[in-house]
Every structure is written in C-alpha cells, then in structure tokens.
Image (cartoon, rainbow, N blue to C red):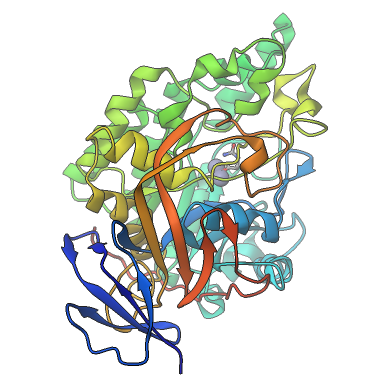
Length: 463
Ligand code: URP
Ligand code: ZN
Ligand code: ZN
C-alpha cells in the first residue's frame, strides 16, 4: 500500500478553510486533520499552499467533429491542458453520429479517451438527431454511467439544431430516466435569419458573429428552455451563460423554486466583442457561441456567481487552430468553427479576476470549479470533496504563482491562445490524480491512459 501525507498547507473546501493534513492511502483520502499518525507515509510539504479538491471541468470538447472540422485537442493534449490548469476530471461531450445511436457515441468516446487520458473523465451525450429511436434510447444512458444529454436550440442548418417539441419530449423522458438535460440556449431560427441578412449585405468579418447572435436571442432561448422544463417538471442545466439578459430568467426561476442549474465560462470575464473586431482576421480566434459580449455584462455575471444563480464555471474548451481551421471562415464568418481553448486557463482566470479582485471567495472558487461541478455532474462525493473515502484528487494551489500565458508554454495542441500575454497570479504547483502526482511546476508527470472513466449518476442535488 502506498501512503502519503500532505502537510503544512491550508485546506480550502467549498465550506471553509482550515489548517489540516491530508492522509492518502493508495487512491483515496483516508483522514483529514491535525497531527495525524503517519509513520511510513511519504511527506508532501504544502507550506504556503492551499490544498483543494481536484478541479472538475464539466464542459470540454476533445477530438470532436464540429463546424466541418475536428477540434484540435485530442484526449492526450486536451487532458494535458486541463491538468496543467489543476483539473483532475473532465466531463466531455460524446457527439452522436447523425445516423448513430447514443450507445455508439459513448463507445466512440471510450475509444478516443483510452490510452490517452491523463486525468479521470466522464461523458455527456450531445444529441445531433433526436429521432423516436433516440428518444427511446435515453433511459438506457444511466446504466452506461452517463447522466446527462446536451440539446442544442442553436446551430440551425446543422443536425445539432433541435425543435421545441423534441426538446420538450426529451425533457419529459430524461426526467423519468434520471438524466439531466443541458441546453445550448440560443434561438437558432433568429440567428440563421440574421446571418443570412448579414451575408447578403456583405458583412462577412468575424465581428458579425456576435452581431448576429445578440443577447436577446440567448435570453429568449434561456427563458424558453426554462419554461419548457417547468412544464415537463424536469431539472435543467443551462450551459455557457454569457450575459446579463440570459441570467434574468435563471434568477427568476430560482426565486420561484425551479431546479435550474447554470454554468458560465472564463472567456465571458476576460474577452469581449472588441476582441472579435480586432484587425484583419484576428477576431476569428475569439469566435465561440454564445459569443463574447460587451464588457458591462461582467459585473452581472460576477453577481450571478456570488449569489448562486450561476453554480459552475466550465471551460467550454473547444479548440481549433487558427491556421487551416479558423481560416475556413476567412470570407464568411458563419464558416469559422465555433469554440476557444480555455481548459488550462479556467482556474487561473477565476482566481486572478475573481478571488484576486474580491469578487468571489476562495471557498466559492472551490465550489464553482470542483464541489458544485461534482454535484451537478453526478460524481459527488467521490470527487469534489476532501473527506475520507473520496478519491485523492488534490491540487496544491500556489496563490503567489505568477504566470503569463503564451502559445509557447501551453500544454494543449492549438497554434494560438486567446490568452496570449495575459498574466495570472495564482496557479497549481502540484496536482494529484487518485493519489498519484500527475503535474508539478509546469511539467506533466501522469502517463497517457492513466485517466479512468467515472460512472456518473444524477441525484437532484440542492446547491
Ligand atoms: O463555441 C462553442 N461553444 N463551441 C462548442 C460547442 C458548444 O456549443 O458548446
Ligand atoms: Zn453549446
Ligand atoms: Zn461547448
């Protein structure tokens, strides 16, 4: 049996911060406290560090076909980026083949992750073709350890786009099956019309990506999804909330006692429409959906995090190279593949701009990145907690660590980073996955394939 004791640090959980040691046996935390007897255990000195449960990123797209191309990060490079940001578990979107089954999507994703993943992982299924057969298949997801599906109200003209009647019926079925419905909430019909009109005017530059996806189309779809979920009496997770207008129906739902979980992402706190309007084709590097917004939205988003309207902070890591991929839309912004890398920068962004500026506490930081993620995504308390019996997924967070992002020091496989030149204060110095040192001071130590599939079960958490 291997034994380690992490000593001398401050344990930071979602509930509080305190001085304690953590005793690990093999892959599990076995004790948390002071003066723990630890005879033969290897000592890990965490002096000056904050000791946190490993971060969970419930929103990544590794090795996924999208926008006519494949995301740039596969399971080796994508999990390296996540791990370098302190993430020990991701929940990735297995994308249904248009003619395929949900089981097929899960099998394909098992194949992609096997032998490559450096950290633990689970899968959602992203629905591309919600036929009667697929609806009938939803209840079988739970037995495959998959507890969530994503349905797209946007991307009209692609198989992802789903009509309201199908979305509503899926909510009814999912509710009975114990599966959580996640929505990409943007009004696909209105976006398609605005895009058509923009192109007809000759407005082809990246900035028109945002101008054809105004806040109202996100707010309208968010409200519609919430109302449909209320009629279906189903819990709902609204992902990648980008703006104040979309927060309003979420806040209202919470006041009325409806179960609506909500996620936001780092890009909405540090980038804006101004980045999309950068000279030449540079703006393509910032094309993601929902799009980047006017800066004034950031304060309402911070408030949403503070008061618990936004429960989780996911990366929506969906990386495409500038060369050959973003460039697909050089003459037509609708052809720029949607998505940005961010798994590596997620926690550092939240720490620097959130904790560092007094917007959220260190305990809220842990809740948003780890504990709430574990609850919403059905892996709590195995993950997201530092208690006896939990997996020993642990981040030693150095609040004084100074880093500057550059494509040269990123761990993913993308030819640019939207975070180029951005400085962070605070970052992970050591990361343990199930008791094993996986990352230290910029260096990946975990072996490819050491990440393990984690079965998830949605159990209606109250957050
Ligand atoms: O632009 C984004 N967000 N790309 C990834 C796909 C999605 O909608 O999450
Ligand atoms: Zn989406
Ligand atoms: Zn996404």
